[in-house]
Amino acid sequence: MKRYCGRDFGADELLAVTQLIAQNPTANRAELSRQLCVLLDWFKPNGGLKDMTCRVAMLRMQADGLITLPPSQWRPRRRPEFLATAATNAQPLLAQPVHELAPLHLRQVAGPANSRLWNEYIARYHYLGYTPMAGSRLFLPNPQKSKISPTAPPGSPLRTPCSSDRGRRSEQQAHRCSPWMARR
Image 1 (cartoon, rainbow, N blue to C red):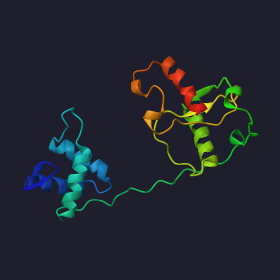
Image 2: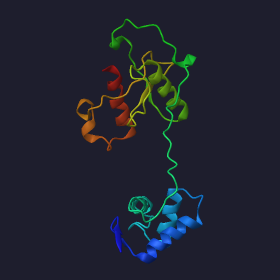
Image 3: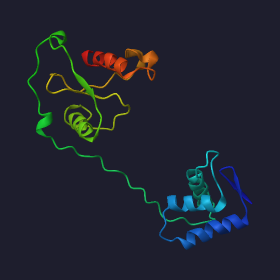
């Protein structure tokens, strides 16, 4: 009897794993782990399959020489390339203080079109280029009403207003706090 990921696998269960792999030669590791979870009644307390735990157990079985898994199908993702469009062409520099640009009109990046526009701005003008950005607080200026560049909040919650009640704000309160970030 062998123990993998908190579960004891007897000779019968190891044979079932080997037979499952032999019966499904085209299945990938994820499919095999889901099928094995169903076969062995390996579920989480919430009723979901323990498929990731099962995958780890199968990898350890392979490392111990008990089974042979199909090769991994993981491939590194190519970084997306963003072609420059007229939407992100450089605008004339503003030589005015921020208070003269008021009112600032920002909209939160939502939807695929705004997301592509945000990514294009970052790829084109950020000194590090495009990398996926963590967080949901990305803002674009309203082009008809504002002459400022896209913005994201500072990284530290201590430097952002209303951080103490984040998650408990209404939409109106969140909107009241967000323009501050653009004026920093």
